[in-house]
Amino acid sequence: MSVREEYFRCGSCKVFEVAYQDRMGRTMGQCSRKPRYGQVAAHDYACIDYRLDRLRLVPGAKVPDDADSTPRERERRRALEGATERMSRSRPATGAPSGGGRRHDPDDDAPKPKLQSIPLSLDPLTRDGDDAMDRAELKAILAEVLDETLGISDPPMQRRFRGGKVLIQPADPELAPKELEVDVLFRKVTAVRDKLRLLEQKVNATDAIDAEDKALLQGYVSSCYGSLKSFNFLFAEREDWFQN
Image (cartoon, rainbow, N blue to C red; front, top):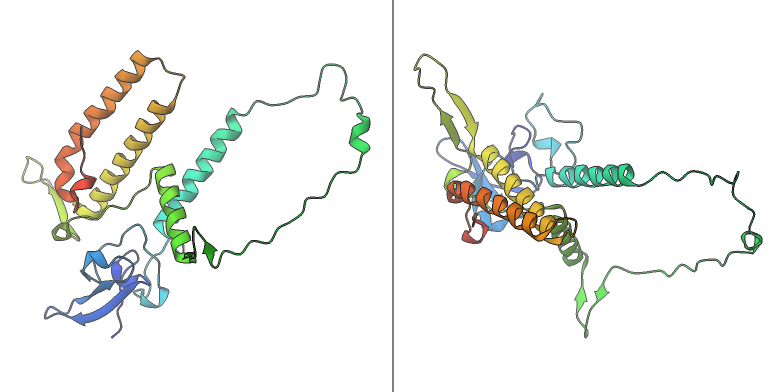
């Protein structure tokens, strides 16, 4: 059974497994990467791990230039590029000494010891005892570390809201309402939560702020968590809720 969907829909993702078509003609299936999602529709908006399958695209569908990277990979790349740019701006420029140039050091002419390369095998990696860590486990651990470092997460959303829309109706009935996909709203709320967590970690870890100002900033972050508790109903798991 074939499926054709627009870009960033579950049906055009490589890990979507087609199961059947319902009476309405909609293609249903499962996400092999996230089985906890259960049954998903091909037209559902994809998650941050979306991996494009071009053979499943609707002919003529618009795709971004970097569509072959997952949204998670693009977010990590932008975060790393931003961190590198900030480090390069904060690094002090080193100029030549005022004495008219660097003096010659005789030790510079001495032969430098060669570095010895040691081959490492990643398949399998041995841990304590006789257990082995395969590549999938290693990738999962590295992804978790990067997510915690960069403040990126992928919490599951309540299934009943997936593919839904938020309708914002103006007071004037003659004005057109504004529609917003719930999946987009959920991603934005999750991004705000992750950035708040990252800000809280940096405030707690820095020594450049005195205790009084640090407590004030922590209070602001806690107030933001409290204001965002209204969106807790979107999260499938209680442990992902906002807590102030």
